[in-house]
Length: 491
Image (tube, rainbow, N blue to C red; front, side, top):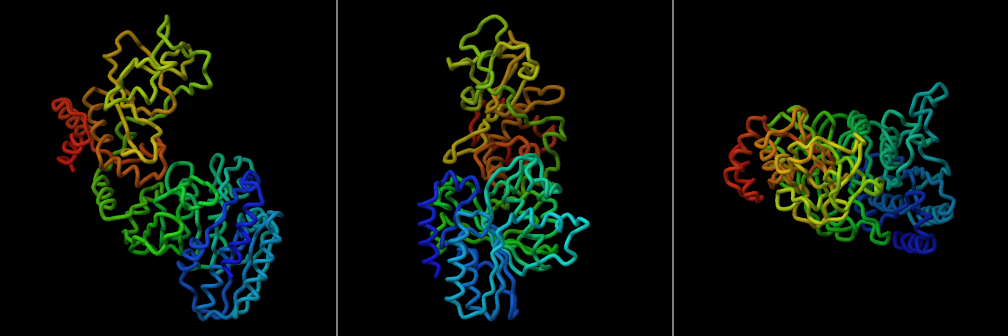
């Protein structure tokens, strides 16, 4: 049954242009992933259960779950599938009919050809014409659409309590799925990792965790092996939640290399309060005891950069939008424009003979004081040894300038009243250490260093940062090992 559905789905994928499917945010689940997701549920001990599959696509998730239910004590399944893509409805109808004719349990199914979110907008917001008894389900299984939508899109306006800026459909589906669950009902979704941190998803996370708890997280080591046939580069996870607020002691976190090796799973039990933590309800994706130890060590400090009067910010100048004011060589009124290439072996080296190293402008938004900074690269390659790569910028090395500029592919840390050299060197010790790099990788699975997230990371008191800086200045050794040795003495 699953194989037949998979063959039909593959034929559909080959027939439909990817550009068209991308308009819907439509990426299909592999057979192995679908079967694994179905295995994660604790099947209710009822003769009859209800299932919701929002954004059902070709129905492979429903097929995998029903195949699992056939081996349980369940006798009747009531399945509701939402799908409003006219191109795939016929295939979904064929597949559900195939499932019904191949199982011994009683299967009642319904395909709703409507927008999953908008069809429940009034009920979700408890409007005057809301249904007094909205439908609830024992189980929800889903691979929601991955697609950014405008902040004024109907789906975003339908769920204003969780949407900020231009949201992504996948987390809107997640919240509506929780709404659709009965108390103690379970949901398993395959989704991107991006919701786990950052200000962008803050409102969603806070509401999500006020209603449900995580029981299981599954991570994929290879981001290009989850939707192999789709050429999707996406940090992806499988999430199982239960709709209640009773926190379990631990969360199960499993890992595989791709979507086809679920026989080779690493498993780890992580303390719940280590994984879901902080007022912003970040989800820290630990995979072993070393990761837990990293979080515990750094969380002994209660300060952050902002609490100490410092802040990481994103570089000011988007170079391709300001080509007319960029200069290759120094000229009158020109000031340096720093790029990630200027960060070399812990220092900022300038000039390096790069194109557009100078900028001539009076726009205050593109200029910053020539002060001491810690520069940090915003983007690194997935395969690189470190995510946090930084360099020390000292104003006294460039005395002829009162202003400088930074390209927006680097971040910089500055202070309200400027930073002393000792503080900058101390910050370098932190951000060039192995433990801070590990912390950031646990916090954020992407290759982009997000200033909002860095500003939430715990840091030691200012006096300790200064002492670390003094020690680094004495050693003159900018290596990662040197920073580790200094930091270890304060942990």
